[in-house]
Amino acid sequence: MTIVDRSSENSDHESVGCKRSPFTSGDGMDSSCSSSWAVGPTLPTDSPRLKVPGGCLGPTPGAVVYNSTPSSVDRPKEQVLCSGDGIDMPQKVLFSPERLSLKWNQVHRIGAGLQNMGNTCFLNSALQCLTYTPPFANYMLSREHSKTCHEPGFCMMCTMQNHIIQVFANSGNVIKPIGVLNELKRIAKHFRYGSQEDAHEFLRYTVDAMQKSCLPGTK
Image (cartoon, rainbow, N blue to C red; front, side, top):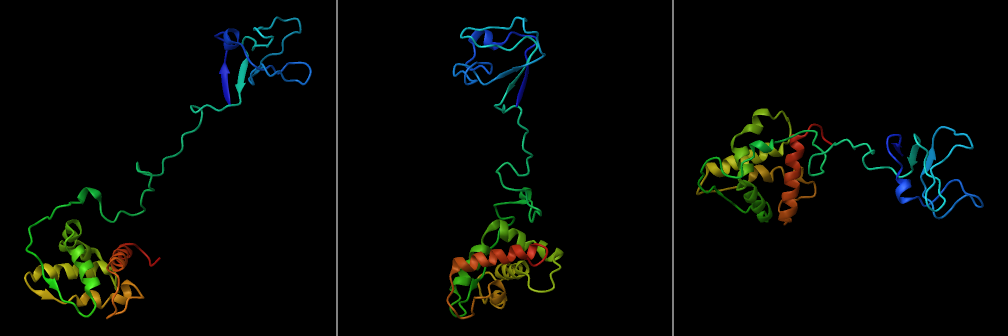
């Protein structure tokens, strides 16, 4: 609802007229008058009122005009609870964006190859992709996670850290990804050692397991 004080200026109805009057005879409405209502002090019946062309009654001086259409200016602003991209702010920041580097922090020789342990090509290919992702490898090689990890049981972050460190420590050789294979059932319950699985599915479960190891609780 908009409240406009017309005490210091003439009504717009004087110049442009109105299209509907609330004070008409017959059915009570005149299709030629606006829907705004003039409300003000009660005037004597013989007091002159502002008349406009078309026979409509304009608001009296000092009256308050009520408009049923809300203005966008009067609407309260919604409280901003999200970032500029519209996504809710996280409860916990796992890694500050300011520290993110898309380049290698130091030059490394090509790491070790991974031996196929029997239908483990899906696992090897996903591990190699993660190993040679610079931002992730930089963090793993810094051993920062293991310095603050207090997980007594399975921790996918610690498992990946040990694997990547071993890969770059054995450049030019071939290693067996035993550390990851031993945790295959914990990464996803339906994975079976010796069974051919989907590489993309394994990658998704691995990333999910790493995130869970950084969050409190089991849910």
